[in-house]
Length: 386
Image (cartoon, rainbow, N blue to C red; front, side, top):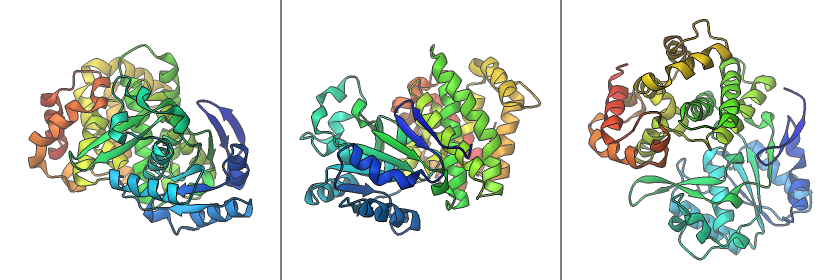
């Protein structure tokens, strides 16, 4: 895993420790001379961010930084980024960081040449065709976490503060031109972020694998992604400087986002409104919901989970063994067992349930996930009842 590799799936990926050194060359190759590096406020002054900026400038590029982002980005953050992009005369974006930096960077590049409001491009039907494809600036993505997989995705998530809902903005050309996956950039992540993002990668693979429909390519990617998480995430948490394990987690994150083109499910359908209302970490919220959604879907997924359990090497290759492994993994990594431990108010079930049922992810759940089902799972996750 410490070896370097170049992949062309689902876009061009330069993978390996130290590949950040190629950032300026990658930008120049794709006609970017004045890149706007977009990241979140927490990373703005971090050594890895400042190093990336210095590398861009040393390569003769006129780079600037934009980092006015909330952990769950809102439309005002996008608007501020667009002002910075246009006023700086930029011609491309380096989307840098975790999900917030990657998603917002992609959205800034997408919206830089559009005249309609961002909400007109929500991932509904063929709304993406409303966009001027020629107005989408080139994107280079550099993940610094191993979870969201947004670096290989064609969409960005943005919170509508008026409705308190997370919305997915989609366009095929939002896919970054090149991704630099450098596991060394993730070494300095706080332990809690390592856990939250790692569990996000697991949730992407798991929900994609369980989603109904015939998509064996996505299923194959998902199960191998989960095998990597199963062996690498505990190692990364115990030994944060293990670059091989960091690399496996970074690969698993990209695999999860590639696989979930098949679909997601109840974990994401619930975590989206919970994150929008309570500003919780997305991956950690998925991790809390994970066993409760699995238990809800048991009748539909038991055989699939048994095959998965055997593949990833669990001693008990059945649903109960897999659920026990999830619970043990969460306990080992310090994931809260219930929603109130994340600061979520149990009394909001009646508000959150219909929001979850309306979330696009709900359609990929193995069993129908209406408001009643969402309320049932939400209440179980509040009470710790499996």
